[in-house]
Length: 103
Image (cartoon, rainbow, N blue to C red; front, top):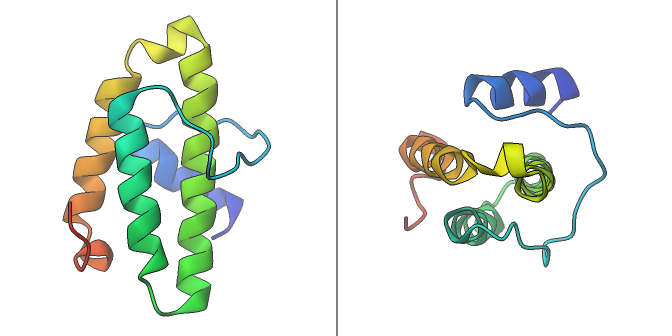
């Protein structure tokens, strides 16, 4: 996924777009709803058979994690983070490409 498409996707979901370095999968956001979503999303991505699709979604998950960790660290950004994570989780749940996953 190009940066332009990733940023468009993030903006469509109302995500703050930060261009920061990628966080490891072990990093926690610190907001239980966000962390639970990322665990489910990572598990779902792992079940995708096409390597190129899996790689693109892994990039997206890493960028979400990095963005959310940065937002959680900033008091002004963390205020609405739980609601944002819930919104992203609901949107992902409805996404046809993720329909094989348990949410």
